[in-house]
Length: 232
Picture (cartoon, rainbow, N blue to C red):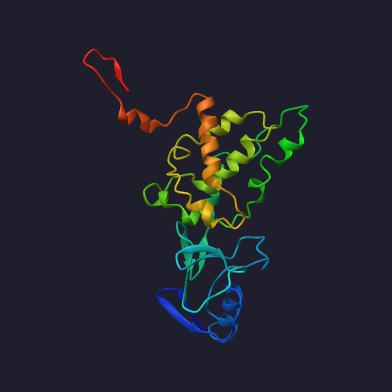
């Protein structure tokens, strides 16, 4: 079986292993053919997210993807390439701070119903693989976009009944945030946990409207008559 790996150029390896995961193939290449090959891995159980790469143009976890003859393996996009299939994820993680993607303060004496407890359970399953970050096309035109990775985490806390100041988080995602997303759904397609960042961003937009925000691009469709009254 031949596997093509994007390094400084595309290198083809012939591996005598069938039915293996991509991570097992990479391990075999490193063990028996090329010890210089660099890639990331951790739990080998689709839990840690560290082995995410692109195969044939689609983000996958190497430990769960079963390799096929002729596959092209590349590093994640929208991140600084360190070596071979290893990228620096500091930029992706830094957007969490800009988006205030954490529990800032807990309201006192709040009791949670069963529905409250499960409303953001799926978002809490994020394994930080950054597949959505890599798949997002917005970074081609806006490198400061907060991105699906961080915006899903914002919704996780905005939707938490115990969060005492959700407005501060909504305020933080108005610039380079919820209105910059194209709602293309690429992030949802590649998420190994089945999280829909697109849906979360739509809910953040609705919540933004409740706090008096609106899509700034709407202003581009307006104008005014000679008397100064607005055109809608």
